[in-house]
Image 1 (spheres, rainbow, N blue to C red):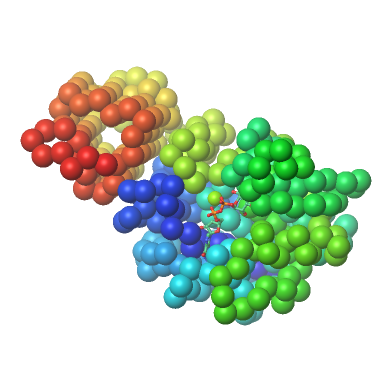
Image 2 (image 1 turned 45 degrees about the vertical axis):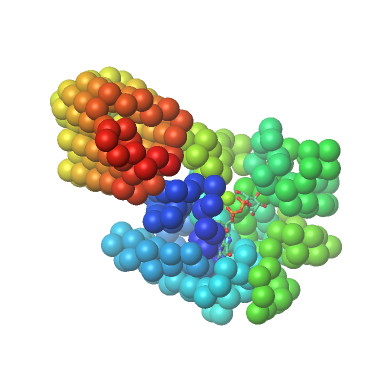
Length: 332
Ligand code: GDD
Ligand code: MG
């Protein structure tokens, strides 16, 4: 069994951070989004293939530095090919069946159990589905008897959504689906290919615990909460010499004596938070510096951001090297 992970999107909804950092390398609860997805892939998988595109070399370097339980091979695209095009481009040498995973989803799932169910029921694929209130950003399934998927509509208007069960971005597919994807051009797997596969029987695997797609600032912070609440954010607590409740995921080289922390914070390597500053429900990437008495709430600060003393940063996203407040403020 092999797994194919799609990791080629531009992360437009997380700009300006994604101008320098691919979205999957943003740390949530102290671990990159990509490695939270890797945690779902069974240890006995033979190989994991990454269909990369945007900032492929950054992803490559990151994966080489961070160990994995199985070998990882990357297959970059010269031009973005969409989800289906990326699958096609990376299809050589995949297994039949294979796991397909989006790299920006946050959940807990037993993929081996999903594979066993797939083999038991047969059909062309088994797709994990999550139940959500707002289906607009997702692919929505209509379910028939025995959890067979009768219809699939990508990002429908609410009035056209057949249910609240959406494609969770995790599936088992028969190898033959790869032959159904046209080559040499961008293809949306969900729009152009999946509907045509339904006559060959696609089944649902319903996720019951938690699920989110971390593709926007709000959903990214919500995803981080889910991970912390599931105990996937390390030991919790707050950095040495700091005050507050946490949980805070603390990387190497963090200095935060005299600062205070509310719930759900990630501090990347070499982050400094000066005394009297307060951080809550936020992600501060490597090298970011928050000066004294500044407040950061519900925000994403990319690498090497400087927040000047006394500033209030609420619900904002700053990219690498931004300076907030003080004499020179380039802004977002
Ligand atoms: N290789 C490659 N090439 N990968 C890509 C490309 C591309 O051109 N475009 C997107 N991807 C990757 C993204 O990095 C992500 O991991 C995955 O494919 C899905 O792309 P998104 O851009 O995040 O799609 P979405 O969130 O709008 O919708 C998809 O995910 C939803 C669940 O999170 C669809 O699969 C929906 O049906 C699904 O509900
Ligand atoms: Mg997504």
